[in-house]
Image (cartoon, rainbow, N blue to C red; front, side, top):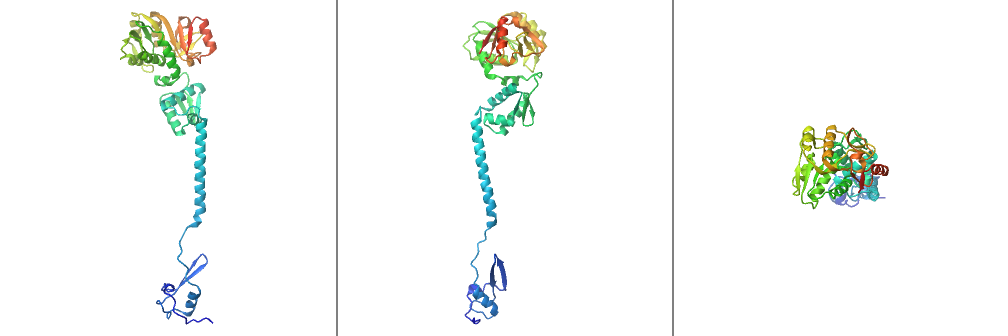
Length: 353
């Protein structure tokens, strides 16, 4: 028999003023009323239960039920991070032209559009080892400049019959234009008078003149951008015939300029071109400029066309000069072999750079 009148319970068993049962994961905890060292106020069955079921030690509450999901999410994040890192590394490894500056990258995008007619954001991001966000920003800038038309997931080249702004043309085939301009400036001798037509290749020629060792030349130009490049060049005496400004090409044309040119003579004409057909000649989309170019041809002893290979075998609305009126064509080595052969057959000296 169990003695219900045993010694008083310890103080730690008499912590509650009311009888309370708490269920926690299958365990029971009981509290009783009374003073430390006294069991007078506690019922016998409570005292017995308290002696046979001592209180559980304090519990530390943890939310272990959430840990598996947390660990799963952490694992997934680690795997995703690893996959992204691996993808980035693989993308960099597949990149054709990584590490380009923004301006260089946009110029190459313009050239790729010329070659392919369209590009995708994903392929450009992989090619240049950069993010799709960066590429979308490049395409937006080029769209505002008039180079392309945005499409879902990429961009398309503007229609060929839409004339592109001068700022856009400047970015296209830039390396080829530099080589062409360097070859052209090598033909100029001190004391000569040269005519420099409007255009982006001829503007690069003006840049090369500034950097050349020439001591003194006369330059006649109808192009505002060419004039601005050469305005402070110490070796250049600059002559502008005047005319009506065409903002799309930064050029002056009209009867005022034609009348002024009639009073001048030049050793060489460096003629820009929007299109060159080996069977027809040099063409432009703007009739007044074509008429001014005819006057330039009349007063020059030598006519030198400067154009990158993309201009060959193309057509436009206004004829500037027939093939027989050209003395030299300076173009890049990507020029179609059949076009080069036909021009040479018709008496044009073709210099490939």
